[in-house]
Image (tube, rainbow, N blue to C red; front, top):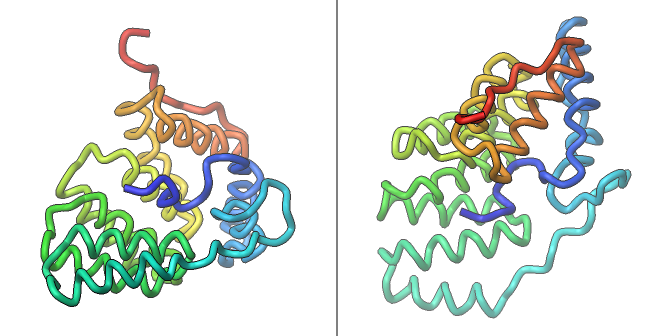
Length: 208
C-alpha cells in the first residue's frame, strides 16, 4: 500500500471548505465538486496553491527493468504491483490500472493492490468502479483502514454522500484512533460537522 494512495493528501486537506461546498450543492440540486477544489486537495498540489504541481517524471529505467521481468514471468504479481506503483507515482493512472489488474488476476487476495486499483479508478473518473473495488478490498480485510479512509473520501467528494462517508470514517477512527488514517478520518468528520453546523460525533478511543 502506497502512502500516495490516499485519494486526497492528508497534509493541507481543507475538509471544512470543500465539504461546505458539497453540502451547498446538495441543497440546490447538486453539481460535481469543481476541478479547482479537487485539485487543491489532490496529491501533488501544494496547500493553498491555485494549480497542482507537475506530476513526477516516470522512472523509465525501473519500468524497463520490471517490464523485462514480466515478459519472462507474466505471473509475477509482485513485479506487476511494483510496475503499477511506478506508474502511479508518475500519475500515469491508466497505465497503473493495467498492472494492478494484472497483479490481482494472479493474486486476487491482495487488499493493498486492490485499494490502489480503486484509487486509480477514481483518479480516472470512474467513481462507481472505485467504490466497487473498495468493497472488494474490504471483503478481503474488513479492517483495512486505508481502504475505509479512501471509501469515505470518494463517497464524500465523488458521490456527495456525507452520511455514508461519515460511517466509513468513524470505522477508521475506531480501528486506528492515533494512526495517520484515524487522524485524517477525524478531520473528515470534523469537516462534515463544521460544514453542516453540527457537533462532530467522533467515537472516543477505547480506554479514554
